[in-house]
Amino acid sequence: MVSLLSAQHRAQQTAGGKAGCLRCHVSSPSNSSKGVWIVLLFGIGCVMESISCPKECTCQYLAVNCTGKHLEEFPSAIPLDTRQLILAQNKLSYLPSVELNFLSDLIYLDCSGNTLGEELDFTFVSIIKLIYLDLSFNNLTQVTFGTFSQLSSLVVLKLSDNPSLVEIEKNSFANNTWLRHLDISRCSLAFIDTSTFRDLPNLRSLGLSGNPWFCNCSFVELFAWMKGSGVTFLDADNTTCYSPAFMHGLSMLEEGPEQLHYKCYIHFDDQDYLFLGLIGFCIFSAGTVLAWLLGVCAVIYEFLTASDEDEEGTPSPNPPEAAQVRICGGSEGPSTVEVPVEDVRVASESTLSEPARDKLAARPLLGRT
Image (cartoon, rainbow, N blue to C red; front, side, top):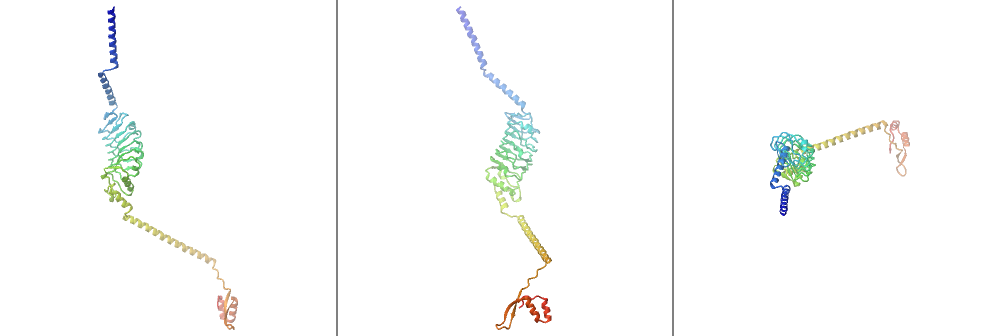
């Protein structure tokens, strides 16, 4: 009996030990099973990645590289969570805004070495997280406010080597206040407004070389900003003026500003003297004509006034009321008295002969002594 109980007890212990081992095996998989699971998950990830990656491109974690694949259209099936997209050295002539703006997490975009020439206004609408944008070596023609206005986080912008780029509006980068690196070298720019750069408080490096800059007097303000901005200028030795002739080849950072200041504020050219002479001649001619007109008006006025007086008649002068008469032969000598003119006339006429009286009657007696 005792031996039977002992055997039963040993059987229970054996069963319990096996069950415990089984539980341990299920709850704690071995190292080999862990490796199997890792390989399986990696394979699933690779399959999913291969499904969403464009066939022309190579994909890594959050990055798609389509460099030099001779693409003529924007690749499809790009993962929506892509952070880095490289489309360099292809034949893309435009960027579809709809497909591009699905990539809302994109922070790095390289489209260099393509044939982008269409206007890019409002192309980059929804990729507001973009930090790096390279559009160099394309055929861009102009940059406006709407081109990069939505890229408020942009830090690096490369627009160099666009030979058809002739205009950058002064407010083109008004919303890109975080911009630190800007390169517009080797384009066809002849003029750019100073406010284009002055409104970028975080700008640290700027490329201006290789452009046909027309350094006239409007560049005085730009030169002053370049001198005091503290910005590092890329390829400074080739940052020179192209025209006019007296500025050709002069550095925009060294001798160019001094020469331009002399020409604009101190030196007078032949055309300046001609202009001043023309102004003086115009002033002299205007004064002469004005004086002649005033003289003519004065003569006409005098003529009209004299005609009015002739029509009204000239009033005769008041005849003298009395005349002085000298009396001789008195006891006290000759004396002078005043008598009425009429009395003098009557007295004179009584003592004169008839012809003399006729002459005297023909004219008035005025103050005769």
